[in-house]
Image 1 (spheres, rainbow, N blue to C red):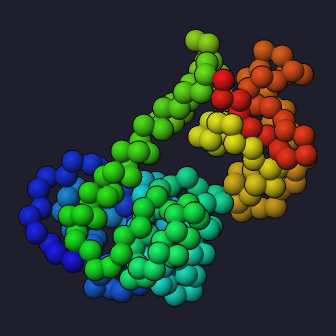
Image 2: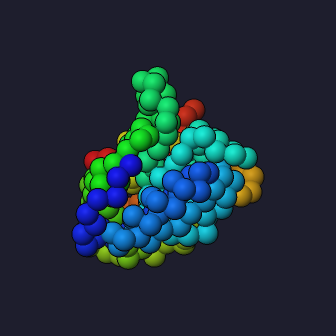
Length: 232
């Protein structure tokens, strides 16, 4: 890794650096802080998940070889409960492992040793891809994640926090079918919920979203599989 010229930051974001090696964690954190990033650190997998829950993290730099809970388990846990982008950083350079990481939901994969300026460039690229999604447009439906505002055909919808979370999750993946079990795990990660709880939440959202809740055209049921947001 090299710490060459450090200019003014072009992207402001909160970065969680998950790395068990103190020296690497210190060098990466100091470099990113010098570029204008807010840096949060974790030295093991359990601490990493605690940091994500406790901070408004914009992107995670995740080492795979971690104590207590390895990087694979952390990545899997994040993808069950969060859409935060993840850049995997590891000395493992086998193609099979890079493919595994990307298929599990990593947004990028950086192999050690790496150049710090290249790492920052990759962070910027990931953030550019994610940030436009803060304003989601699905047909006539607009979700502004920064303002926590939902508009449909010019009118603003007043949703409860859980109704909003459900709609954002579906709007980030229009057309994708989510099973009731997956929705329960994502929306209530800290307590067990049933498919009936999900059905009740979908019912309440439809009452506010659909012109005719009995014949939904936005949040539709796929019999035997779950729910999806109609992309048209």
